[in-house]
Length: 353
Image 1 (cartoon, rainbow, N blue to C red):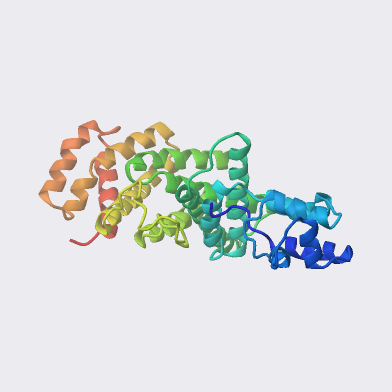
Image 2: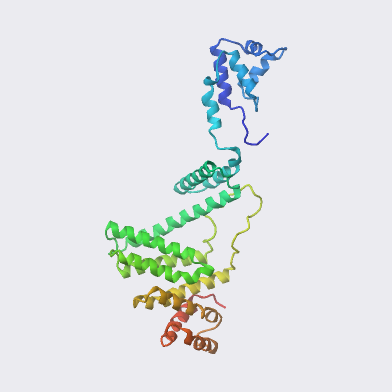
């Protein structure tokens, strides 16, 4: 019998007992009216009323109601409560998500649960099979992680608003929060191989925020710096991949990650390069350089990252590599100065050899 198949609910047994008592019949008399014979004929009624018949047939319930001169309308609400439940093939995923939300904060748990119910019902209405339990659990964990990140960035931005002279109007606070969350989203989406896309996307977000005419350049820069620093700390701590709570799913053993986990030292190197690129881009932003120019400089400086990570300041190899790449820079005359700024920041944040 399927695990989530119909079981005789206790409420149905109590309802049948009340119908028998209202008809003024004993259990033995009901059994006789049902056509049951033998010395233990009353036992079937006792088992039905106490729910000891786990998987009753429709004929059994119909015979009992007929003997009490009752109908399905007298127990329809109890039966509808069962038939209103989700289909049995959705149960494993629902239970996995239920175990997850028990360990989440109330606000996050409510959002994760509502999202899972809504998306599962949508697939059902479109005639699609429900997602496997592991995928539903992974999706819910990802949503819980995103909500935890959103709350963390919101707390950071609220702290910035409490600084003297930064409260501003409601519109300024709202735009500042929107910009801060946009910066966080860009940082999250441009990790690893997509790091070269970070500066252009941050530039577009900055230009859009400035175009609103609400926040100053300095205010936007302070927000970006605070969010970047928070993201850097979270990356170094290794908290950007896992969900805030790991729930045990129906599958035994850990699920293999779609993206291989970087060793801690390599992760620190990526963070150091990202920070150095952001710092080297500041003079370009201050001068009003367009996004294409900023992206070209970012790609050029990225080519110096490996030698910067593997050599010390003032080494002959570093100087030779810089001189070798200088002709390919967007502006060769300015390349040494930006390379020096890039290396100075990289030297302070890269892992120690």
